[in-house]
Amino acid sequence: MSNQHWSRKRQILQLLSAQRFVSGETIAQHIGLSRGAVNQHIDAMAEYGIDIYSVKGKGYQLASAVSLIDEAELIANIDKRCFYFDEIDSTNAFVMGHAAELASGDFCVAEYQSQGRGRRGRAWQSPYGHHLYTSLFWRSQLAPQQLMGLSLVVGCALVKVLQDFGVTELGLKWPNDIYLEGRKLAGVLVELGQNQTQGVELVIGIGLNMNMPATQGNQIDQPWSDLSHLDKSMSKTQLLIALHKQLTLDLREFEANGLASFIERWNQADLFMQKQVKLLMAPNEVHGAYHGIDNQGAVVLETEAGMKSFIGGEITLRSN
Image (cartoon, rainbow, N blue to C red):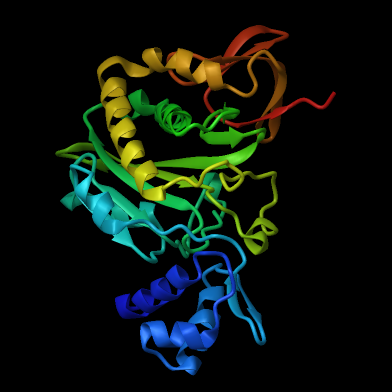
């Protein structure tokens, strides 16, 4: 969709941002469109996950708040290149596709992803303007095997930033999920590419639920959370600026000293510490008491055969 079309839609969303009904006539007058054109824009926004109520005689109202990024503020406060899109297939795909032209710390942000992905190829619900979708590029001289714990570092960085914004009751689930009050709030997707002359190319994708629309939430097959219930609304722009800064600091620390300096941070937020869990590694299951992570980022379980470390699989709490 063209920038002009998104400009019109953003104007409409701005008029509806007060979460009250606004007549179609008022919208049309403000942005210089016909009533029919306004209706077309509003109908089109439904395809992007934006729910707008239409009530005869009252007008239009947003079903849930839409928080748009201030592109000028974002770019002015990040010391690397920042690519901002109203819509994109996936921020990770964009960064990976342009890796040869990028420098460590370059940043891609979008309001909507048509093909957002989570771990193991799962779809990530990406309605326009409701959440935070971003990918950071990083070029590393470390060997791929030295980068095993990277998603844990990213999780620690995200928890630190959210805590600085006053969010409490956060938890980390190995290897790459962030939880709020026991339900999934955010996910991390790290992808690696190899450049023979410039080392390992890393794309660090983050999806964070800010304000989940009901229609999108109903499509998610696990308990989820968002930040909509917080006492004060959070600036997505300020959150991205802080996240870029924290990620840069933590990635430099990780490259210099490995995972050792993050283990305490991880363990303090680990959801499953000292709990009985099962680790699913198809077709096998391992049961044991969970003891956090080791210096390589592997999960440590106390099994019947003693302490063991595992680098793959999915952890769940044991129900028996």
